[in-house]
Image 1 (tube, one colour):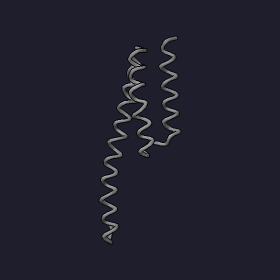
Image 2: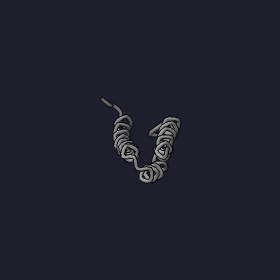
Image 3: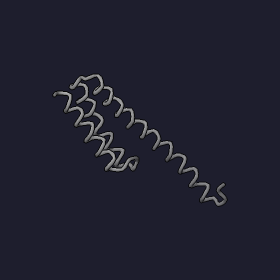
Length: 88
């Protein structure tokens, strides 16, 4: 339990920040799920559109510190390869 007033304030700040980060992480996962569902349905146009909408959201999460840049780069690379493979 926090004793000093500054420690108590930090606890409050961390709680607020955690809530924001949780919402952002959830939002990113929703966009990823939409791309996954479009790929699973086999519709290339829908998958491309979903990926195009998801990309800026994923990069925004990186800039906010929610995910590491290499993690998102890897996810985007794999997703785009799977979308590209739908045409074949």
